[in-house]
Image 1: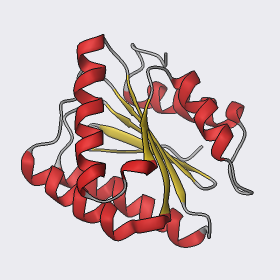
Image 2 (image 1 turned 60 degrees about the vertical axis):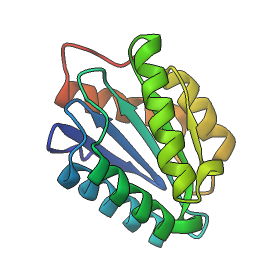
Image 3 (image 1 turned 180 degrees about the horizontal axis):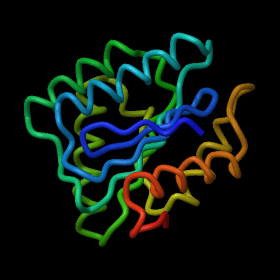
Length: 160
């Protein structure tokens, strides 16, 4: 797997899925890097891209400027975003914070029906399975991608 690392985050592209892991706070450059990859996937797959985004408690929500750019970017992507599946790993408070931000960003971008927040990587993989297209890899391949991101970026934490 070709794991890439930038700005406290890591990604790997698997078919029509961008798998991301955020260890550090979500910055403008980090978001733009993730979004560039998401655009490339969406442009190469008629059914659009899936974005499986694991967010660790060591990260922090994007600031207002980054949220505005995220809203505009996701609005521009339109149906090229099949689904954003956020996986905030941590306690209930962290999950609720991430859920509120994801809902807010996607609502304003007009993409609210294209997002879900789940509590575990296993739940996220089940969502992906239900949305799978011809280029979507198996759950086993995606689980290996998540594990590879953790090994590269956060080896002491491991995937949940």
